[in-house]
Image (cartoon, rainbow, N blue to C red):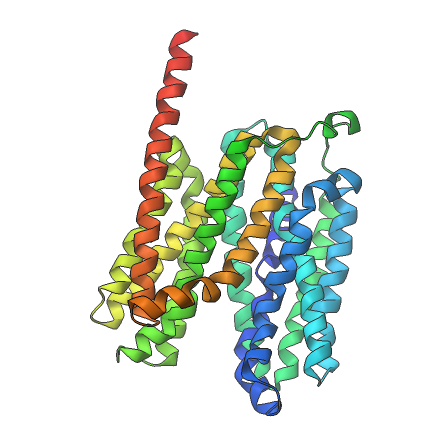
Length: 385
């Protein structure tokens, strides 16, 4: 039950997606509101997620983890469910911002609790980091499916999906004790090594790139005559399923690939983007999307593991909070970053996949060099002892 309670926190990491299936209906119900403004119902939580994630390490030093969880749960319920009774876009967007604040706590907290409980057992920690991604992907799929089903009744009903927070609240309340933290004196010495900032910056870029498979998938499929909107939905479902599967196998991959596990995730996503770019039919682009998702399911826990190892037990929460902030910031910034580049290379859709494949290939090469250097350094240390 402790394992279930820890993983339950991650169910709400991608909770913002419950309203996405209803966006078209909301646009139809609010003809006087610009479509871009309505789209913010889906994107605004990612922006507000950044606000609290950046300060998560400091918050954890001030408050108990269970206290923060209960506050986040309240924010999640208010921000998620209240729009059910609203009809104006302004108040709805305010609630979506509140929801984003909750996710900004849940996202780093899920990983931080794993580190508190399993830091001294790297094997279990890696397995739990992978499963945390699996649970988050499952939560994302569940929120979208339930939200889409409820939206068939009326677009307001999609927001009722957020009542699921009550179940998670009860599980954590009864089965997750307050994790043991370092003393206040030790926590005052928090200082992140420079390498952590390197991982965080790369993670920002990676999340920006990964989001391009979501924003350009439908354009590539419909624009090239491979299928319709339903086909794009299947493709994106397999992207999420790829992340789900990647999280499951992550723990075993670390045992075999060790320091090269993160590089393997980059490789899968590079191949996936390349396959999507060179695709000549729906099957190829779906397979490419799946491989990108599979790589994502390895990259996320791999990055969190690298940050934890580099930061150490005291500063890990601060580093994880920065990474969580970069996850939301990268996803939100993707259309803005890609727009000028795509104007040069030829528009959205498949050209975006080409850009993503190239950038990922560069990151892959740098990762292989860094992993090889790290392996040699570790070997030299062992021989010296």
